[in-house]
Image 1 (cartoon, rainbow, N blue to C red):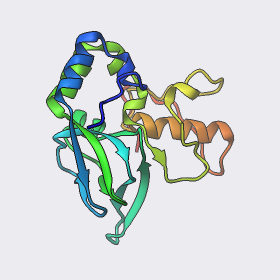
Image 2: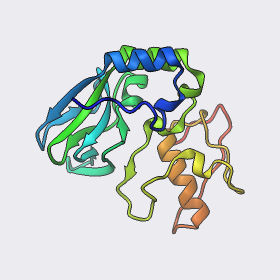
Image 3: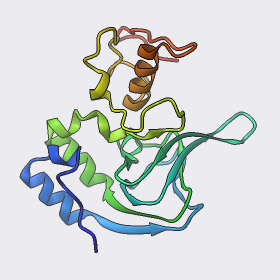
Image 4: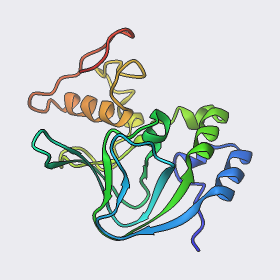
Length: 189
């Protein structure tokens, strides 16, 4: 059975006891193509670390047709936002057979509570964007220090990955994209 690589980004921020707890709690799981891993509107009992395969994060449009929001490939973590929020905004479905580690939600929440550096990491809700013009390795840390990036942090209703993608597109001057700074009392639409 493969072992969880605790030296990869996000998990490398855990202290020694957090690493031991995580390693002791993970399970290995396989799902066939077409399986729903996390249902929109539902709580997720796990955070997933994709080892092999491809998972699409989708939302149904007004006509009930799935619109792809993001892709999770090998090395991507998904379900963290659903665990922390108590429900998923999107549904995650395997595009092909997938193998991944399952991190129990209660263990993940405890790791967040006990490890401030791990909790502050912006890569935990990361995904590869379905938009081809957004880099595959986009993380908030890549653009946070760039000149002209407005403060769109914990005071928005957007998740970190969406915020990073919007800021990146705004910096590139993508058609119709502009970033807007929000005060703590405002909520994004």
